[in-house]
Image (tube, rainbow, N blue to C red; front, top):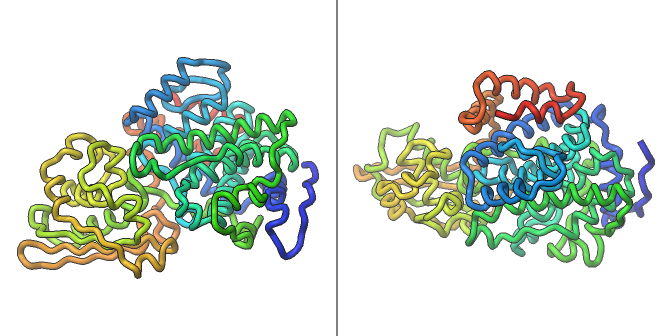
Length: 468
């Protein structure tokens, strides 16, 4: 391992922030990772592949056209688009896999970072590792590094980054994807800093896409994954990028946020790995809809009633949730439905579950579900806002026609570290997402390989078993 590069030390952590992170990426070794981080990386790979194949199976106009365009354009057969199992140039594989893995909104996330690291980091890491023939240990290390960069940078520039209309999946995701790819390319610390700089100047991701044109949101992780791999490739060959991309006067922190908490960015660096803090999604929708869905499903379990017994519904939640998912009540597309608290809650009440089938046309236009959304009110609650994002709470009040009044509060939806999914639940989710793609025997083989991936000498061997 080569030497790191110097950064200005002292109490002001702002100076040399990009270089400090580059040194961290360069110096990280598999043998130094705690078991919790390596285990979580394996779960992240499993969850990512499940979400991607569900996205490939369900598709959207954009993801289908993007995949078609990339395959038609051809090029060097360097890395695989998972799903169609076609090899394309590595940067295009990262782009396509990043987009496909975000289609059904089942990818992981981090509530303080306010974004989705897996779809950027794992897209970059898997494509690059296949291209290079990296080992399973190298893959895991790159994923842990990428998640850490995502969470550290994104957490430090929020909440103002989000309030300005930026989506960290597209912005910080580019840096994280570059970190993962740089690690796999075994770049020096200086070249890693260049890769971060090159990725940073490509970073983009505007949240207007949650208001209109929702299907285009998949370009956020796709383009950030592509930018990360491209940046590492360029840096490898000596191309320079701004090595002050985070802290510079025209860099990330200054232009994309009102303030940056550098103490938070570097807190417990090399000691606490933020991949351990990420949540797993159980519902194919915006995370801000999950607490209301959890609440109504709990009420159905705890009480004897059906949707036809409901007189009215009040959902209280925090303003950020309302800004993301509180405006649409009668969605016309699956993409709109994923960003509708009212629809997701009502579909769960009518169908007594909420999954991919609840986003299909027969549910979107179900008279029962659409009629129930007319009975929904959504209100902002200052108490729930004051605790956000430490909590992502919702309160659901349902008045029944027989006079009963039902109430449920959820502080954190299922899948958070404090309210985790079990290993069995994770496997059930993977099975659900890949049911139409793999045989049971093939699925079991894949699961076994993922949870022993540190023993694999060449990641391309693992990618090859992901074919039908």
